[in-house]
Amino acid sequence: MHQVILFYKYTDIADPVALSYSQRELCESLNLKGRIIIAKEGINGTLEGSAENVEAYVAKLLELPGFSDIDVKRSEGTGNAFPKLKINVRDEIVSSKLHESVNPAVDTGNHLDVDLLHKWYEEGEDFVIVDMRNDYEYVSGHFEKSINPQFRDFRDLAEKVDSLEIPKDKKVVTVCTGGVRCEKASAFLKQKGYKDVYQLKNGMHTYLEKYPKGHFKGSLYVFDGRVTVRFDKDGEVIGRCEFCAAPTELYANDDTAGRSRHILCCENCLALKQEQSLSIRR
Image (cartoon, rainbow, N blue to C red; front, side):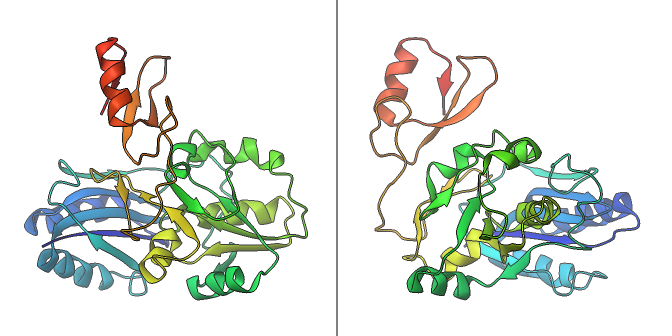
């Protein structure tokens, strides 16, 4: 059985390069593939391997200074979720281009437990959910009544925040896949004057693990070879083909109009576009 893990931690790392070397050595010894980003501000990773080797990795990860309380999200893998292992040292663990004063280790939104978010939905609490993922992630699955700011990528946050048109005293909940983007997004909203800001603790993945038939509809987009993960096997397909609007959760790469974009595209339209020699491929 293969397992995929998703994790992050904002914590000061004195020597990111040294940590990248030791992480590579550990991952290679356990035959793990995936991606890890390390910066002075922390670590962000997703890996796949045999369940036994993944758990051995997690045990070692928790032993690292500052990482003992790191939360690890788990889901079933396929054995080919990632083609290889990539470990990179960067300026940020998730690219935001926000000012360095936006520091989740110093101040961020209140962490909202998945149980409490579910309760808020069930009891009709007055709040607004803002989805901090990219627009192409949103279309295959999202929380009910959530706002999609239409990000091409997360770096659009600073530009798009003023178009949200949410009252500054409204209860705002930021959501994303595993939680790492919301750490900075909620911190930034607080800097912009929002008074009551929350972030979903450990992200959509954790909510779906506990409430697969809850208030998240569709499938969860993931950045690996699985592309989407469905927690509710019998749930509604809410994604729609870009070309014919048929229900689908299949993604394709569209290179027909300059910068490549990831879109939902059903099998019939994919075949048709390929017959027309358009640069749309899966």
